[in-house]
Amino acid sequence: MKHSLMAAAALATMIAAPAAAEQFAVRIDEAYQDANPRLMQTLHVTLLERFTENGAHYVVIDAPGVAYVEAFILAINRDAVALSVLAADWTNPTMQHLSPAQRLGFLQAIECEFCVS
Figure 1 (cartoon, rainbow, N blue to C red):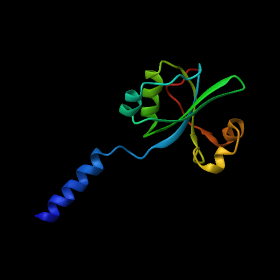
Figure 2: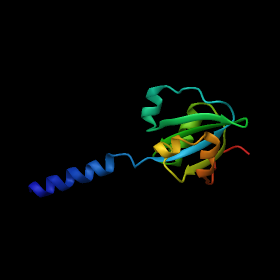
Figure 3: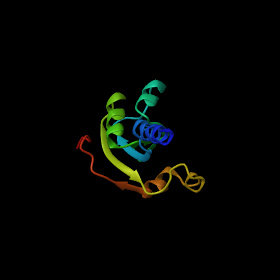
């Protein structure tokens, strides 16, 4: 009985826990302004960095998946122009020594159904 309860509790925890976050870079139409912290918490999104490079605006976030990224972009009232996943950990100290322009080389473009063309 005790083992059944422990197994059920472990299963419930696995089901209720959000998926592990991935890092995404979203090129957006306008510069990003801070979002409400409660919104970020509700969407399970963490801001890693925002920057502008050659006139293009980017926001780099941790999110459980693309659907969360889409919800976040819609909530901050921006249009996504392109979506990428990161081939390397954006927060890694080695990456931090590179300029944003150099780190753009670590982005891998992915299909973005919610991006404007």
